[in-house]
Image (tube, rainbow, N blue to C red; front, side, top):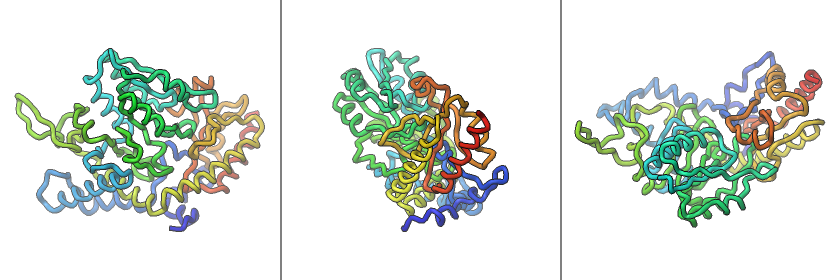
Length: 405
């Protein structure tokens, strides 16, 4: 498919909106990407044509729903190149997925064990592990950030040992856009006998992820970062590892046999999918991946990188503006502050011009503490954005700067 941003933008109904009399310019894609009409219609079609519970019915509508649901699982498997479809657990999103793993290791680790997290994590990849170590008293160590915001890999090498059981970190920082060297981290971790969980919420929308090539043990992402709906995502885990974990939730569908004396769990992937799932969301997730693959992730990466470079150079021309995490290896996320101005005030004025940005700590308070700041303005770009929109952003920032000064 030839990449044509103007044609692509026609697939996104929300871009026709007016905000405060201005055309919507959406620069908050790292929080939630926008949704194309084909994905929206897939949700409507489910409720119009084959709304039924899955796996449990012998009637035709249930069988149609089950087939569509499981088809999406296979699309996820193929898109991310997992070895088996049963290694794909459908969850409510990245946070749910991480909690499944943290809960599963609660009884597997002791006070003699160590786990390692990076200093640039989203809170969803910090808090579940803190909850875990409160129960089993495993030691939690942190990979610190260097001055420019990148991970200090030399420090990581110095703290990992045979006592380390799990290393967990994001592929891409949601607050800075920095791409972490996960290939090197996975190799070092495996050499020391540790398993690795990668939070791929911010990477999966921007470039190709090959799970078998990475040889990662656990990987997770959310559909709403990938042109899909909210409330659905997936957890990938190597089959032999998932089979050892205790489920986070109990209930229907995740069991093989239930008596008042004992319950046995279902086989993968259903062992981790208790209750009626987000059926329409899972189906729509598959349609979202279809849409992204139609455009092509290589095309998306190249175009977004072009936008990133253009926006970065344009922002650097604004006097008093500082970009955090200004490194070469990053995705299309730019976090900045302007001297003596509060990020919330800047974001509020940009909204008056129909420009949606994110302000605050971005659920990454340790990063803000590292830079000794209270928060930033975050501009997160997507393949639906244009250079003209970036020009309007620069113009609006300059107006905001004049007003607030």
